[in-house]
Length: 115
Length: 112
Image (cartoon, chains in turn purple, yellow):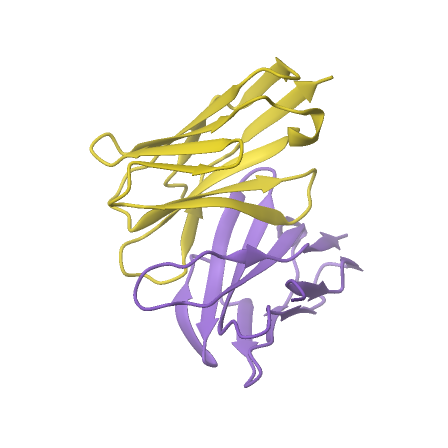
């Protein structure tokens, strides 16, 4: 079974631009989560989508948004990019069985550099 | 904010030795997961241990969980150079679904 895929793998943008990152979960997985990783703040939860609905949201400004499609693929968008948005963005998918957290499988990440 | 904190932040050992990493967290959890990350790449899931479990094994990995102390440890036995990576513990907030809070990680270097 193919793993979680993320596109693009690397991205360079300038301040003020916007960016869209894509994530394809493992086949059959319905939950997709996004995380931001920076040297200063570490790994931080952005949001989680399940069945096209945002189930949880982390403490990030409204410039960060996401969505999930009916095939469980997900996109996240960052508008009005700032230098501090430079990070590795990781997507994770899981089965989400019941109320308990399930094992999350991560993609390789998208390395975003904002100049 | 980070719920989990790993200790030590960095660890350097020789091949064949055992490596022990510790994780402490603050609030009640449903489960705790350990992940490995190689040099800025994606996270690889190692083990998930539920709050009603005390110990779990997977190959050369042994994870313990002490919910009374809000701590967990990851033991890698007979380490190899390929085990060189950063290791993170991740906890979930009760009934919050797939929302993980990660610790700062332990950077492990295994010298051949």
